[in-house]
Length: 195
Image (cartoon, rainbow, N blue to C red):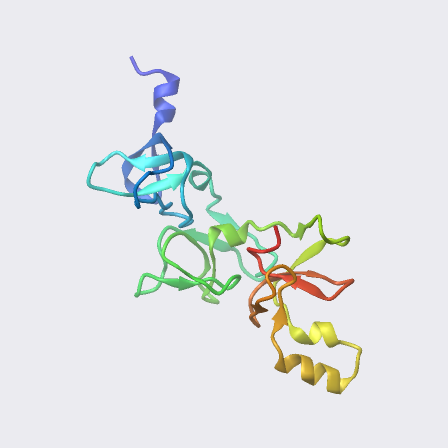
């Protein structure tokens, strides 16, 4: 007789043709790392693994419950639809938030060819750092001229020529990528550096 607990152990998911089984993934001793087929981040802990031995499809427990459609502040004109593989012929997309490529799940706008990694789509609007007194706000189009606004044309033109520096790692923040920024201090931080 199949119990309720057994039913929760094996599920079907829209993103994969085979049943998925709940497993605990522990850190491997060798060089093999389990990477989530959805968000493409390393898996440790609860995950759903394909029941077919020859298939290496695996999803974080949290990636199982991703909403199929989201309305995101970064792209207010259209909803973003969750695709379980990139909707482009080469099997890759470039995330409009972080600028990095992806091969797994993407939140996609077909009209605008706008794509977000699932992790980027769920970034918090506000982050706090212990070493800074003000909050860092998520900025969808971080522009250098924001820093120089109101300080004169020459300063604005000079700011446009320079990369903005990350408050945490001191590396450049690329134009067009999202960043966290402190509007009081004109500091910014890479998405991955803020916390």
